Image 1 (spheres, rainbow, N blue to C red):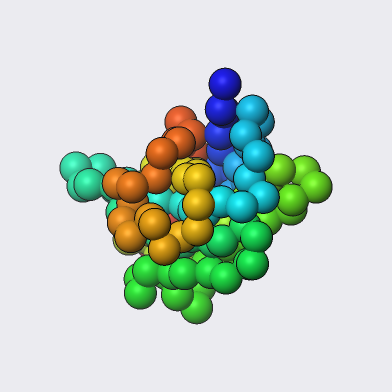
Image 2 (image 1 turned 60 degrees about the vertical axis):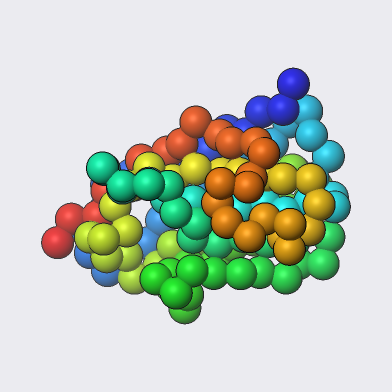
Length: 125
């Protein structure tokens, strides 16, 4: 059974930082696309960042580029999202996602096959 478990969500003030973690089990991530998506209240889930685990290439949404960094630790089967210079509009539930194959087959958030349960991030002004 594939399980993705997120952690690290919290309430912070604008300008602050957080690091989210996603631990994956029951799944070999070595040749896959993994990413983070955000869902604000009343909004659809939208992609923030994704990464090709094998080659390390990364992709970011315009709204987070330059502030968020996606990375992984293959030895621990863990995906990270470093979030700096947080803004109130970054508030939402953050989900870890995974999909077999490169990120080119994941053109949008809805294409990810596996999802975690999410971790809440709240940024106050």
